[in-house]
Image (cartoon, rainbow, N blue to C red; front, side, top):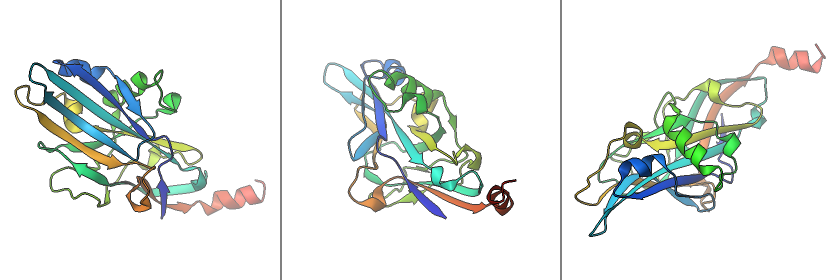
Length: 215
């Protein structure tokens, strides 16, 4: 088993709009790839005269090239750690099989394509977890993920989204409502809190021997 830590440049993209949940959900307005923690989810904020609507999605990259083409992957799980759980409404943290390599690094000119593709992307075989009962500063692993998604000779890309964001379930427009958590990134000083892709694999020894002997 090998733990692959997320690469520098993991980040989040957010959408914010006044009095329009639909606009916040479909139009990005900012991003960050340098902080040691990022917020994920959605929320509404009563400003007294208006409501600010927010949606944030997170993007992860792992250099899994050390596996090599001969690796036979038998298990893949994603390990994440939350710094803060602000979710007054619990939600599933969905893992999305999104190859955002064409938007890497995330920047002003690439953020919209990555943001939209996260919402539209295919969810992996398991979620990371539901926020109900979650403890902060505690690493949790997802269920089993799609072993065929891992790039054995390069980078493996994922994104994260709220299940309520995906379903378009709007929060309260009468009161401020927080449906978000804060997750640590690769930049956090405590290495145990960084995102990890946990992979179990064996080597295809026949292919290795054929390569050694030049077949």
